[in-house]
Structure formats: structure tokens, C-alpha cells
Amino acid sequence: MAGQSLPQGAWVVIADGEKALILVNEGDAQNINLVLRRKEAQDNPQAQDWATDRPGRMNDGMGGPHRSALEPTDWHQMEKERFASDLADILYKAAHNGSYSGLVIIASRVVLGVLRKELHSEVQDKIILDLPKVLTNHPLDAIEDAVRAALQDAE
Image 1 (tube, rainbow, N blue to C red):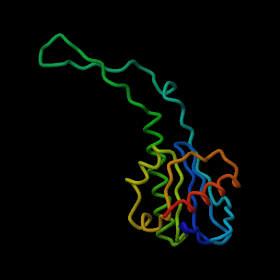
Image 2: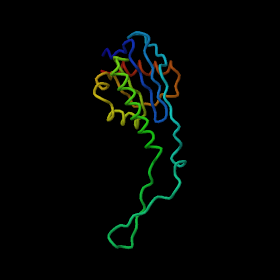
Image 3: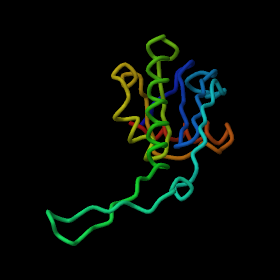
């Protein structure tokens, strides 16, 4: 099994719900050398920091005395999803401008799930590999090793 390769100029996007690193391979297919091209970040407080009120209540039926609590809105989760959607827009604009020819996405499960739904077909056509993993706080050499190993394992 030969695996896949990462061509020179391909992008590697590392993302979680609060930070995204856009790296470019300045090496070649055999010797990956990732260099930071762009960093996106957002301040996303924890879920308990968003809550200001108790959850709402709703009548169970018409005219009945019973009321049920509603689930509180998870603003933290919504911000992660919005961040992923914004990242999908960035990737589309870059793909449309011809900024990259290949793409590897390594992201948390939440972000990867949103990206898979939000990515334009022009971006999807460039994906070499996507991997549900959080590497945003890892050093570049560890990211390079993880990309190399994931590409090697890919069929």
C-alpha cells in the first residue's frame, strides 16, 4: 500500500472550534515541510459563561397545568459551528482564486462535521484527506508527522 502524497503547495488545515491553522507544504511529496500561512482564531467562552437566564418553559398541551423545561441554547457549540462555517468560506474563496490544488483537513469532530456539510464542491474536489483529530496546539513537526502517517495509511 503506497498511500497518498501531499504535493508542494497543498494546504493543510488544522482546526478546532476556536482556532484554525492554515499551513502550506513548501516541501515536496516525499519531504513534507509545512509553513504557517494564516491563523484564524475566535474567543469562544465556555458554555456556562454564556448562560444568563434559566432555561425557558413551555406548556405541555392546550390549557393544561403542566409545563416542561426547554433545553438551554448551547451558545458555545453554536459558535464552534459558526467558526467552521466561516472557515468553509475562507477555503472556498482560496480555492476559487487558485491558491491551492490539494487540501488536507484535520479537525475536531464537530468542526469536521460542519465543514463536510458546508464545503463547496470546488473545495471538496481538492480534498486529499480529512481526519477527525485535534492538533491545533501541537508543534509543526508533530503535525507534519501526523499528516505523513495519515497519508501513508490512506488508500
